Amino acid sequence: MVARMFLDMIPSDALASLRSNTNILTILRCSTPFGQAIGLATHSFYNQDSEVGLLVVGSMNAISSGLLTFQSLVELLSEDFLSDNSWEVLRGRRRVYACLHVVMGAFLMSLVGAWA
Image (cartoon, rainbow, N blue to C red; front, top):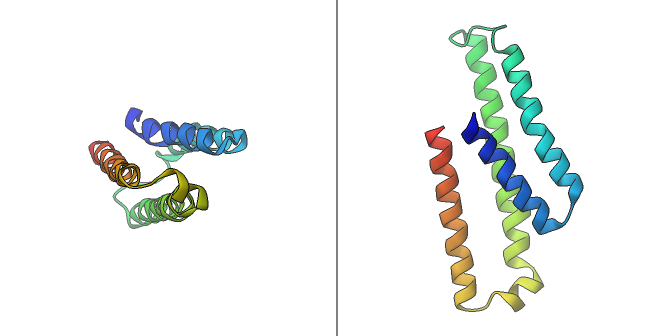
């Protein structure tokens, strides 16, 4: 559970600080505890080994991974690396370092996700 909160709350802080939007921070920070509370409240209502339980878990995992992939690739990286300001600020080695940091961050996030 600690790793899950890390994966949800720390990037939300970074995202909100980059965009200077407190609404995004509030929504992302509140969605983690509410989602965990709903999961804890409903986990005893269905059998995890049943067909319905596996279908629900698989569907929720697919939706969340699709949303995370869309947000990270389309909304964040394209704006940060393809904007006019990016071409002025990130030149040469700085652009290479930025790309390496993105790859390293994705690797570390997947490592924490696999460990959890």
